[in-house]
Length: 427
Image (cartoon, rainbow, N blue to C red; front, side, top):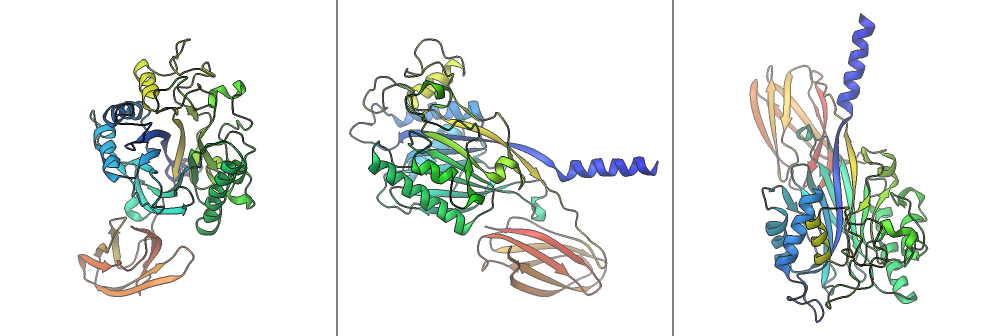
């Protein structure tokens, strides 16, 4: 009987320790959304119509993270898409990540939207500014025990590399890619990364793509989830992963020529590929939305009938952009910790994440002195505070506004032996 009970405890513990959720990613070049040019005008690239098309596609795929390229730098349109395309028809859970712009000369940018019921933004960094910004959004998963500071982080690298054929444009793409990888190597290595965007590459042998998959630091190389590396341009072998162009002829805004290029990607870091840090790619979940593999060098809506998506989604994909979006899923395994609570402190909790004030809720058997230490993730003590705790329930407001944004380890101790460590996310 004792062995049986022990077995149940082990099984239950395994279940608790590996609480799991699934997140869906969607990456899409919106084709000059809100950006009007001599060829993409308010007539042939109408924002109101595009917003409806994007809303249909998003509600069909239901992404938890939705990253876009070719969004105007005018933030009015960022919110317009959020309010009139994403949060419509009963959907109200999408939020927009911060949209810091560092390259003042670019006229389109990348934006990230996310499911705020599952995720939050922990930071936004710009990896490089050559030609266009390459953004890194640090997202955290809202686990069941987030209030105890336990969470999982996902870094979304979103870029739109230089377009065009020829050696000069290939070199410009390579510079953007090398800058991005160098930033990752020196700032946030060994994390859960997804690298996504319109890379404008014609072959996996291009220097930019090689910088991503064969970077000199082997620990931060990226991987193609479907391993479809090769010469993608005008090659029917890769018809199922080609994303551009949805049109054969053009009204002036979308490119023509039919589907014969693979420009749009979501690549995986080694940690995400192998699931070594709590986030793992779901095998066979990557696909190009609306791509049936039967329209090489043809328009998306040409015969034979494309049945890979419903007719209204196919129409939205065709009319909204000359790119097709790409999607995949990952699982999030959330380790759940068990705090060690004893001695004079019966219970201690606080809301998490925090901004400027840490609000401690404490239930103590008798009056005692409590010491709170705050450590960075590399073990450096950055703050210490001692205070008296009254018998019974009490609250203690602690100013943490001076701490930089990020993740910290809190350690609470008191003379009679109470010792508790928790994670704190400062935003």
